[in-house]
Amino acid sequence: MSGDIVVLVSVVILIGLFSMQHYGTDKVGWLFAPIVLIWFLFIGSTGIYNICKYDTSVLKAFSPTYIYLYFKRRGLDGWISLGGILLSITGTEALYADIAYFPLLAIQLAFTLFVFPCLLLAYCGQAAYLVNHKEHYQDAFYASIPNSVYWPMFVVATGAAIVGSQATISGTYSIIKQAVAHGCFPRVKIVHTSKKFLGQIYCPDINWILMLGCIAVTASFKNQSQIGNAYGTAVVLVMLVTTLLMVLIMLLVWHCHWILVLIFTVLSLFVELSYFSAVIFKIDQGGWVPLIIAAISLLVMSVWHYATVKKYEFEMHSKVSMSWILGLGPSLGLVRVPGVGLVYTELASGVPHIFSHFITNLPAIHSVVVFVCVKYLPVYTVPEEERFLVKRIGPKTFRMFRCVARYGYKDLHKKDDDFENKLLTNLFSFIRIETMMEPASNSSTYSSTYSVNNTQDSTVDLIHNNNNHNNNNNMDMFSSMVDYTVSTLDTIVPSDSPHNAVSFSQDNTIEEEETDELEFLKTCKESGVVHIMGNTVVKARNGSGLPKKIAIDYVYAFLAKVCRENSVILHVPHETLLNVGQVFYV
Image 1 (cartoon, rainbow, N blue to C red):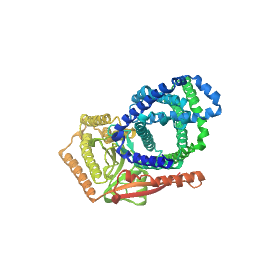
Image 2: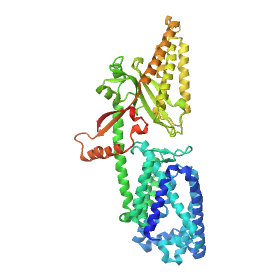
Image 3: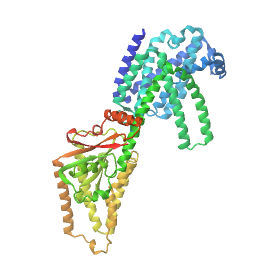
Image 4: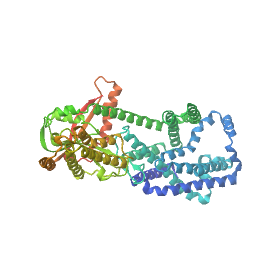
């Protein structure tokens, strides 16, 4: 086959591989194990065949003596050849990318008892073949395959290459997801493709970028050696970074003895730096590609993380205090228009700065205001009865509430009235429960304490049911659910107090207040629901250096423009969306 045909076939295979990604690994993963099993059996059996047929003396290569003799005979050329030898172990890196998809013990057993022996037999078999056929050094693998199994081996080899590529693609999805979760990468769409495995995901945007990059590299190089040099450079750098991070973990997390850390560091870096020194000579032969890609990725992640952290710190430090809210007066000192305003915020506590910014420029707000915080938890689904956590903010006359909506990664946040209806239904339930708890402050000490304990017990049960996926913010919100009940303890009247008696007329008054507030909420809902979202623009402060201005005003601005907006992620209807803009200087 000519070089152009090989490139064309490779591009077609790449397009097909990336086009199948949206089905998920669990849909096509059942093919991977048989292909890899047959592949290793083939190469192991072929290795045994070639060793027995051509030269059994190649097994002497297991002796470390021949390493010394090889470098002594070849000198600098032998040392540079380590860059090519590195390619024989690059596939092992894919195993670590697959840890999220398979149990760790399964990978360890498979590699030790099956993969590693088959690889050793395959390479020894090729060496035995080359002893008698030195002219075939450029294509030793296919040349050493017996004619009777050549084409089956060719098909399985192609399938194994696709499986190896799939491991790298899946590993990239996992890294991107973790980077997005830590605020180190722009927001991209992440689709979970499996009910059983949290790590099996699909990123459409990253998928197509990877496909275009792979096609560009394949079509541009047209040379297996250059692609190998690029891959070898990437792998050895990953090995070095992994070792350095491992040292930090051993010191700061595991608190290992410094002698053990020193032994691990010296042994690991001795091997990896040896390969790295050999790879340096390959940088101008294709090794520059991963360095350019890594530099671009580092720039994107650094700029995005810096701006994101500064933005979050601004929101945290600019939270509106409750004293400021109370100082606005019974109606917040504003014109209250009919309707319900859902103010979206990433803060699980406190009143966001975007609210004060909004009412300062437009002194009017809806009759009912709900601060909505949507949290996506690392679980498959959150039960409907545990999804919404509601709390009142300020006195009743403010008509202000907070709601934390929690979703699993397969729960649908639809673009319709479903979310609004469920939220308002939980708001109605909250008002009823709150009204039932209020008489406790006017009854006996025993009954008040009983009501509080019941609420606390139910909250503890709720925390216990969700202990596998709640973060600190969620725990804070659980406790905030009972803030109003705990506060009743401060107003409990002794059982012998004359105010302890609760008259029938007081009960009627409470019921009337509950009915009035519920009717008021229903009327506001019928008037319309508006979604209010903040749109904070980050800019470099006047007097900032040129690198900072470029990073913030151009790089971050471009990334913020092309990444997914919060309104898209939360499926907010555009016809009822109100964006409140503000500028933040860093």
